[in-house]
Image 1 (cartoon, rainbow, N blue to C red):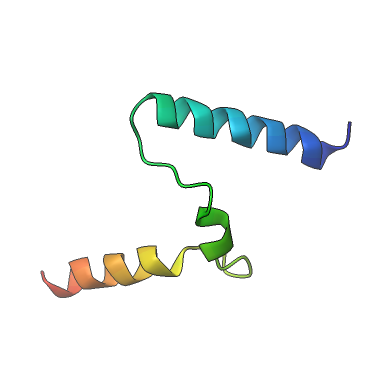
Image 2 (spheres, one colour):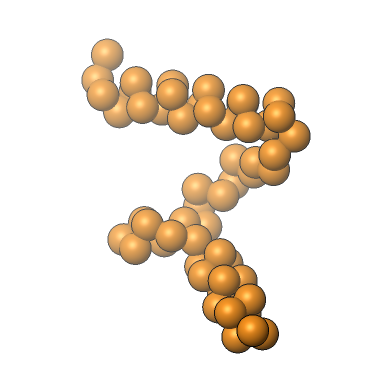
Length: 54
């Protein structure tokens, strides 16, 4: 098994555990990630808005 397949298996297990614990998980999140910057634009916008209000 190649490392990427092992990582995918581990990622899937983590996501299942988080969902079982009642935490939000959307499998479609991966398409919203900006891979070159390794972040989610919506998270950055939310963080920015939060700090602007202070």
